[in-house]
Length: 487
Ligand code: NAI
Ligand code: MG
Image (cartoon, rainbow, N blue to C red; front, side, top):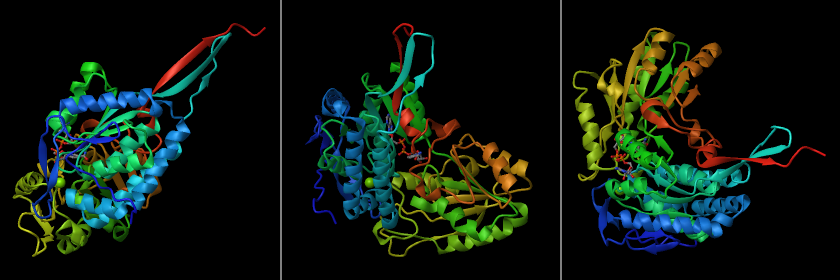
């Protein structure tokens, strides 16, 4: 347990190293999706608060933060990571109550946040420029520089992990960040700001303005002095952000989810695959950008896989987050309605199995019964659209070409996995699958702070996570010095 409690007042914004009320004096209710009660009120920041935050970030860049060396930035990130771990109990409960995430998953997210800080802390002084052989009389080299003020608009499904991967990489490269967390869940973003303050992050290097997407989020995207935007969320808002950012020709990194398949071949070790097949679909109640919502199975193994997945589904229990069931509530009644309307669109399909909502689940909670559909046509809306709930579809295929065609046959391209013992097939498919990450005989690889992540098509563009993210969160300058020929 931490010796220094976090003591955040969520009705404030964190700007310039201080907790300040939003200028408009407005607040929003934050709900606990496990029972529908109001957890607390949060600040409803707007364009004026975003403008203040951008000003504070600019002052940080002109001051201590801008002057910090790469290793000093790394050191403070590592310290933030250590303090995150010290506060694991408090952070996990905040995230569980706010997101509805089962406590065990919330704890895993705290550990991931700490790992991002360690990773990017260690990486901060290891991204080197180049010297480039050029014309006689010249010395040419490159410098990696921060963009300046970076905007980070994050969703509610994995606040801590997404802060880790985007703010962590941006700070490592010396940017100053303005973070707009989601209105559905923003407590750990505020707690993270307090931890960063306690760790000695200079004032203004990180600013957090909670508020609505259409207000604070839109203001951040439109702000003329924000030099880079990273966004994780829905496809429609991603498109809007890219369009809005184009007004100032600001680069954007978009991570917009997917419809990620797992391909199970006739030579797969099905019992090894089974926990991954199901967990990748129901983790965080399916509200995961990289959720595996489509399971493609060779026809010779189809009945066996469906039967075994169905047995697991029948055991799945959805219940209050702090009780740590397999599945928590969805983040909100709105998300529950969206997911249930998807399930209703499967009325013509075969339901292989459903889990259960525990009997004592509070009536006001946003619970959805985990549902497995079998024999789904690849063109069906449930096999095409991101559902973002504990729902998976199983689709049969006859050969490798058909499997690839189905796997690549959506507008998304985020993650895919191949279950097969055949090495040549593994290599072929790793190339043929349209995805930013391909897993072979696993899925998700334990979170993978170190592994570059991002998609193509409607899944977005740009890469976060791993060392690769440092390139996106910085810009390259080429310096060509003419000093004349050697004497
Ligand atoms: P959303 O895209 O509306 O929200 C994500 C973030 O964007 C939030 O911080 C929100 O305040 C902000 N935002 C909303 N409108 C904005 C605007 N006009 N300008 C700037 N920022 C804005 O997503 P929502 O409504 O919470 O979820 C809807 C669907 O989006 C989900 O059902 C799911 O399919 C997808 N989604 C995907 C995520 C992923 O991890 N890729 C995360 C969250 C949602
Ligand atoms: Mg909430």
